[in-house]
Image (cartoon, rainbow, N blue to C red; front, top):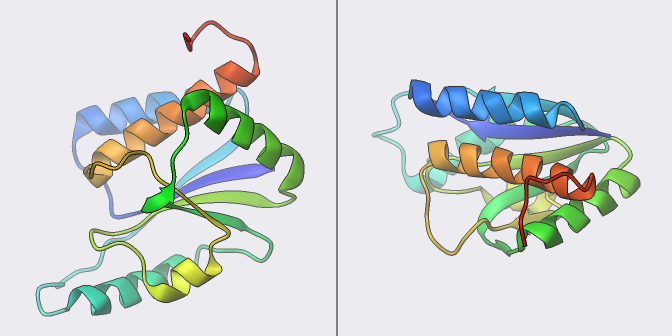
Length: 157
């Protein structure tokens, strides 16, 4: 199984970039893992939130492949403790045949057709985080899950 983190828009802060890249390298010791960036929309001031979500949906769909298991990072998704997320990942590693694709949307979330394509939604918190923070927090959680599954001394209960 290949795992993909698909995000809308690039990060410009060098500290976030370095930290996310560090976790990506760590994750790759355990999983086939790709980090893909969908270019952010330009000239969005004249677009409504719904129009912006629709245009982002068109871009996101170009990255999806037949057989992908799509999981949206969404405020209304299921919340996990880290150990529970590790168990969820273990099950996906067994049951997902192609790609497990986690998606971070744009500033207004996802269009209805993206929700329709997704098999699941996960929430990292009831709080709202910047897209830069979500990339860092989520890559760290994937790494943490892998260390839990491999009984390594990173996570403490």
